[in-house]
Length: 537
Image (cartoon, rainbow, N blue to C red; front, side, top):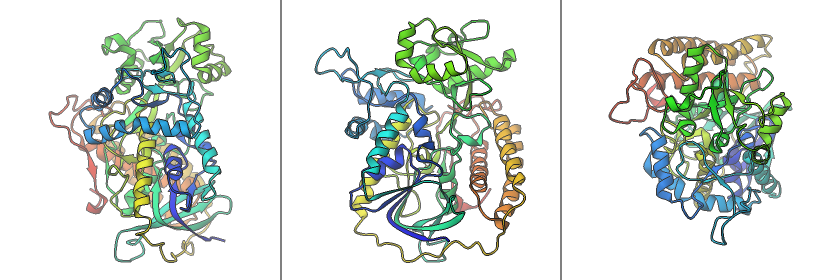
């Protein structure tokens, strides 16, 4: 039987952003942190590279800001970039306080040097990526989860799939405030009502909208879709980052080969062993991800090959094993010894640069509703996210949103009893094959028509297909009981439609949005903003 829950703060998402916010709230604040599956199933756990921050004496805030602005194709909001970078050192110090075991630099020159090993990744002019070997996400997540489990005020709830936000407008009341969410309990099949004074969307990105992705299965754009339905604006959803190097192997589902390999000298090669990045960019393998991904895509299509190769065999075997133990062991499991053989790689959808519009406190357009991490659009990433800025954004904005919630705690009352979920008009489905078919069709046409290289005709085809899918899904959703697959499909289709609309509005090529019909960049950089209150175009 469904039941009501009440908390001061409801956090939807259990990754870096959600846990950071929860841990920065006082111990008397009652917090619920929801995870769609097991707690470790989000993108944070799988992040390999590290966190970008100004940590070394030779680095500067201004240098990090300039690198980010350069990578962002003119669309970064400089105030958001500077805010994030200026708070980078304190965010890292906080992580160290939480017990994150970053890799130390045993060869630090003297007591003034930063005592942790820093690596370099594409687009960065300095070594500023602090990491825990090549499993930084796992180290961070494990440490934050351990801290959260020691807090009696933080309730960690697994197998909970948020369906929709509860707003005053949804309930027919005066006002727009978010009051909580309806949440499917997968263990019972019931939909519970979560009331909260503040609700936080920390659900990650939407890369699962593509057929090939580095992301775990849950990256379905849930927070973006829920926020849109609740009345929040979204921005720049045409900018979907494709990581240049995912392992190409029939059994290797979405295994990312960290950019840090290229940071430490790995080279991209064609099947005949020839390097090709020098033909595309003076920065060669350390060019920003959009350039590297397009170069790989171009060469694969030009030659008709299934993959290219990432080669680090010229480095000593012990160096490779020490710096990249996760990649080494995983590849070895597929019969690839990266100390002796190049790694077959392909681009794959990796990061959603756009999202729900927020300010520097994580506020959305709906009072009481925050969005942080990959779900949000802060202005940090512009038209192309620079490597390892994403985890930094999670910690900086998670902490900023927590501080803002603390400042309002005594001003906002707990919502009165909320109406339960109405399932009286729906039945059990015997047509789940429709969900599976629509899921596959959506991801295939997004890959084919809204991928690394686009055209107006491809986008028009995608728009036509997604409208038909949305109608089918809405009808199914209205008649049958909800399931995780149906909720995710509904959200994916909604976010896909927003991505397509955003791409169709941008009549230029900039950063991650590259179209053959408009190959040049316009002189003025503008965000693509969609507003649900203006209706569907």
